[in-house]
Image (cartoon, rainbow, N blue to C red; front, side, top):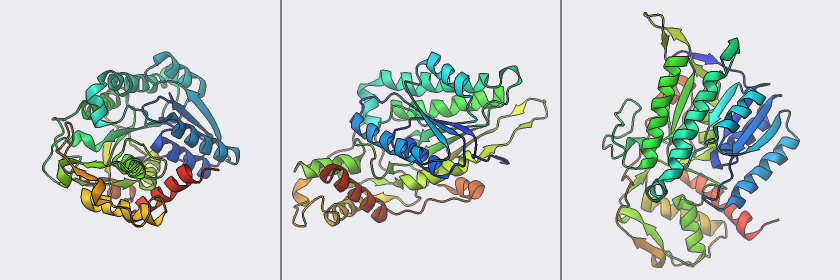
Length: 364
C-alpha cells in the first residue's frame, strides 16, 4: 500500500497510554528526537498494577522533556471519558494520534470484563469519534491514527507463523475480542471518514520497567521472594517475545508513513487502513526463556549464583484464554517500512535484570 510520508518534527502528537510501558518508551524517543512540536501524554494512572511504576516512567519523561526541543503535556484521565477526549482534541488539535491506552491482560479480562469494555471498546470509539470530528469545518485534522492491537487476536490459530492475512474470527478471551473489535471499528471509520489508520499487533512485549503482570516480571518478583513460579501447559509453550525498543522503533516508522488516500471506482474512499504484526519472528520455548531469565538475574546480582531454581518451578496446566504458541510473520512491516525486530532475549532479559537490580535493590 502506498504510504504518505509524515515528518514528525514540529507536530503535535497525542500518545494515549503514556506513561504506560510502551507509551512511556515511545514518548521518551519522541522527546529525544523531535526538533520542536508537542507531545501529549494521556493516561488515567489506574492501579491495575503498582502505580509507582507509572509515576517512575512519568518522572523519566518529565526529566527528558526538560532538555527536549519539543514540549510535553500530561493529561490525567480515561479515554472512556468522552468529554475529556473531546476537550483534549479541541485544545491541542493533534496531528498524529497513537492510541496505546487499553486494559491489558488475558486472564484479568475473565474476572473484570467491565473495564475492558470501558477502555478498549468505549474508549477507542471516543478516540475514533474525535479523529472524525478533527476534520470538521475544513480543518486538516488527524494525519494518522496508529493504535495497538495484539497477537491475542489470532486465538488458537494453529497455522504458524501468524499472518495478517489469516482469519481472526475466533478469539479465546474477551481481551482478544476487544482488540479485534478495534481493528473492525478502525476499518469502518477509515472507510466512512477517510481517516488514515494503522493497527499494530504486538507480540509479548518485555523490557525494563515493564508490566509486572507479564511473566518475566512476575516470575522475577516471586523468585526474589523465594516463592515458586507456575509454568503453564507444563512448559509446552512458545512465545514470540519482542523487546520494547524494537516495538518503539516499529511504531515510530509506522507513524511516519500513513496509508495513502484514494478513491474507488464508485468515487468513495478506499479505506486508508492497514494492520501489521510486530514480533521478533523467533518463537522461544518457555523453558528456554526461563533459563535465560535465570542466568540474567544471576549475572545482574538479583539472585545468588547458588539459587535452587529447580526447587522453585511448578509445572501447571494451560490457563483459560491462553494459547500454546505465538509466532509473528512481520514481512509486511519489513516490506513497507524496512524494519524487522532484531533484539534477542539474551540481550533483552539482561537489560531487564540490570534495571530490576537498580530499581528495587539500589534506588537513588
